[in-house]
Length: 437
Ligand SMILES: [Zn+2]
Image (cartoon, rainbow, N blue to C red; front, side, top):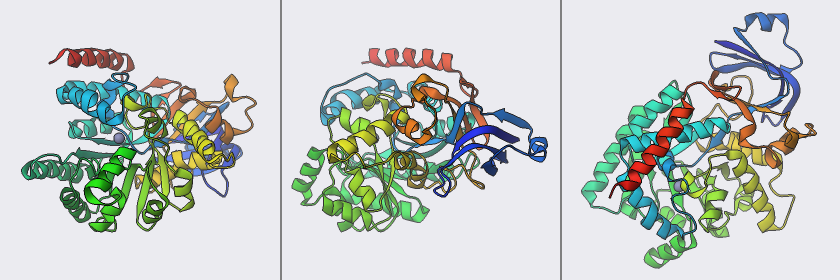
């Protein structure tokens, strides 16, 4: 299928030419064959099987969500206003222990609807249940994802090995599948839930498979204090001590409690950080030193975490809040300019997830893109596009979503998911699980 998008204002995320005020893009075999200014010639028009007018719309790369747990999507609003450790142990884990295949599937479908509707085309899923089902669902729906069967190591060695076997088998089966739209990683849940020898085992397997490792890190002060008390190190320094930091590429979620020395350490290795400002604020965990990490050259992408601690998957909210709190805590309004914030949500997020050819609208890149309705009152005067995208736009401004040149949403209608049915089932499954004892 060839597609021509014309009359478009294109946010390319290409540093040489970040904005094309009036241009067009030609998509062939899921990739951009042309992206340029002006109007398409008769030749381009004749080559296109579909012509889309983007008049009054802004075109930008699909957004990238670098950390989440869609398997927890039914838990939106299930528990608020508790400290993280109590929230996890008393509310999340007991509900999750009751979730079966149907419930997890219903939640995930709901999460996909929400992500597509708010312009996310690529996301990361770290979860332990029914990952094969989910990979199949994503393959059908048409999104792009980095998937992993996450592991908690607070169990016997035999159980640890069983989990690892499952995780490895899943990673091998699905890596680079769905026409390259699915990639995998291995994922120890966190340093406080995985003893060091288990983390070493996981990294050993990841190295053999040539896969990155994803893990929660330094999310709360308590976690870091407890780790220091138990082992004598900050969790990151501990990973260095057991020689796993240099063994594979890492993507850490959160990194809220990172003293200067640890940021320095992070910069010495092949690492990236998933910045989850809303989840970190809601759980009272703090604000990650993102400005300092960025200054040290660390790759940073935005993550939402799950809707149990966010409570939306709208990356426009994440961008705006994540930007504003950095200015606030550093008392410096010049930090994290809009263009950089957009990089975190697109090209840098793609880098963090190790997708080489998404995050930009450029010739040769995968055609993952979204269109926003720029005619809304809160986007006027519609001159300062990058500024509006960060400081004014909402996920609900997104009207069209494409992945690999295939439409997933057109003029606000989802094409590969039945939204009404999914909303109904999500509520039904949540109520069913709540009643189980
Ligand atoms: Zn998380």
